[in-house]
Image 1 (cartoon, rainbow, N blue to C red):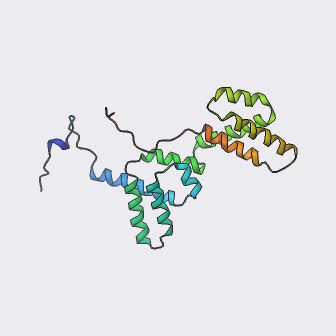
Image 2 (cartoon, one colour):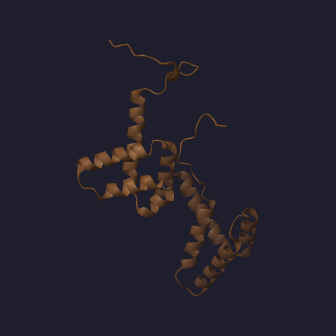
Image 3 (tube, rainbow, N blue to C red):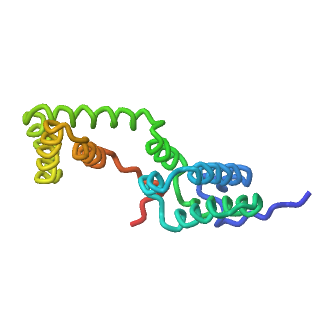
Length: 186
């Protein structure tokens, strides 16, 4: 048996040497699996996840490849580029954009209800503005006014859809895809 040489720098004060090779391999495979899932998403969905440009470029490159071996190597590269990302946060972001997250479904229903209430009367719009001072008030009022006119004229609800998208973007909680450091560097 070969004795493993342990250096003082490799061990922390509690005797922990870090994750095992098997654990690192499992984490890398999990990131590759997430990368494989993201290759199946549309461009708009990928943009909404908020991936770094270097990962987006590799995903687009994967889509162009036809050889199984080349795709396998590309997935390894995608996993490598995602090493500093938190897999749980990436999974949540994917679930949000695909609509599989309960939080995403709840937000969808909340935005639809808010939009319908705003189109029904000014009280909901006033209440929303008072609760969300960061909102672009002139744009919000314009969208509501235009959506009401479209509804009265029995035109397609273009502004109502735009109002929904604006509410969704405003109310959606951002996700940090990168792993937090355990120690705060000062």
